[in-house]
Image (tube, rainbow, N blue to C red; front, top):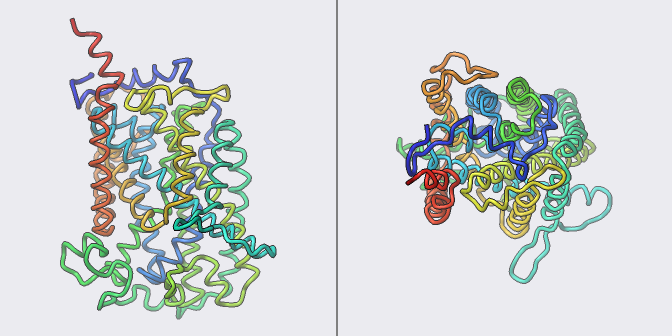
Length: 500
């Protein structure tokens, strides 16, 4: 039932009813195959082509493969909860919409603001990675052109902006068209990943796996070694740092979690799915299983090919990537193929993250927490206005701002969303046991509780500085809510109409 003030909830029935408003109606074009492709498209990208090698060299050594497994377990527990929620509440907005139905408006706003951090910052970060690979590919064909140029005192990344503009146009033209393009590009990058695994196996040396968990670094010169740059857990427990050793492996799990971000984007497309009760669980869980197998295989291959010390970030700050191991062994043709695969791979990552961002803001706008005009759909059945707005903001961020610690910022926001969705399953089971559920999370309450604990554990292994930035972002969000969202909320206006 709707509550008062900050804790008023939007009923499941009202959320579903709102999807039929003519001016804000999304076209139902997607199947379980489309959703699975979206999930694989967004997840296979930065994790395989950049994060795996860098994290092995700087934090975990060969144990980065175990880090991927730990991150996958946390994601898998959360995925089971997402599958139940998405099949029960097939409405755009993902965790934002789920939270509105369970925790109330304030928490829904906070999670929506949090998802802005996940999707928008993630899009900008990956777009910059795409731009760096574009520069490599251009060099391969004889065009030695920098994708970043200096405009006075500011560096402008034209490569990243070019990508964002092209993908914004594609998303405006239709979700089904976006899915078809994504299918082609995803097929290319999966083939590249399989090539890496098959070719790399021939270069594996068992000695490179020893020690599997390198001894913890002391003295503090590595990544996250001291002060606010070490993990919050090691700071609380008074450990020396979180570079290598068990703490390094755990910190790496929190960092490679960035590589799994995306399966939750599938839930944002719930409203555009033909049979959400059946297709959403298949899309969410299926995509996660596929990418986990590929990630662990690549991590084992790359750390078996060369000593983990060869994958350390260079003195000039250049991080290792998947091509580094092949280049070190003189297999230059493979390095070239990887660069092309990475370019294709990161393209779909940015596209699907942008899709998720637009759908969350679309849902928030339809509920009045942001200007309602943004929720208007165009003739292609897509939220044109909000898509153009998102594209513009991401282009500015990717074009002018350095990547910095963007990956960790995205991680903390995503883990927080996962915790709320998992808790929401417990609440909705008690408050609305009558709702038809296309998929039921097994072993409730055990699985949701384990999901919450696993996500909290990974959050504690992010750096203390990341937590500080996250809290600042959340405070800013609360200010925006009280300044605009609370007074313009559709639920608030409906409550006023009921007053005598």
